[in-house]
Length: 194
Image (cartoon, rainbow, N blue to C red; front, top):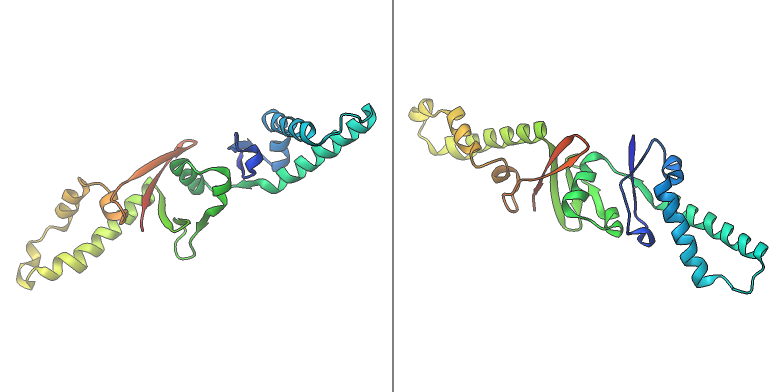
């Protein structure tokens, strides 16, 4: 099952997620069908000449419906689960959803405007925290300990103590916070990194 989001501000009261195997299936769903009908009626109320015959009014409504469906086809996007978690966490509006860009240097880092967020599964966050701690110990801690005393330093105990501060202290360089969002049955952890 694929989850689609609508980025059309005319339908901003309900922009997703809409679930279906294909976009055509989503557009044929009752929920989206009702949005289409509501939008067609709004346009008809604004633009349809009341003096039209019943036949011409039907033509106008059919043409308007086709136009609305065409615009919907262009406005639905499919999001990866990590992007969806970020949308949920940031409470992004439909017109802002297109601002999410995955960075080229890391498939877990996304830009939203000038802000960057690390979005990880629990296992990915654990792995990144462990790598960060290894690097921190090598570059910052061991360098300060005289060579003859390094054998007494217990790296695992140091990591266990640091773990009490949480992963956010290491992974969220902006504010030290670990945030979370649940998409279907999986939790994603979100860290602001700049």
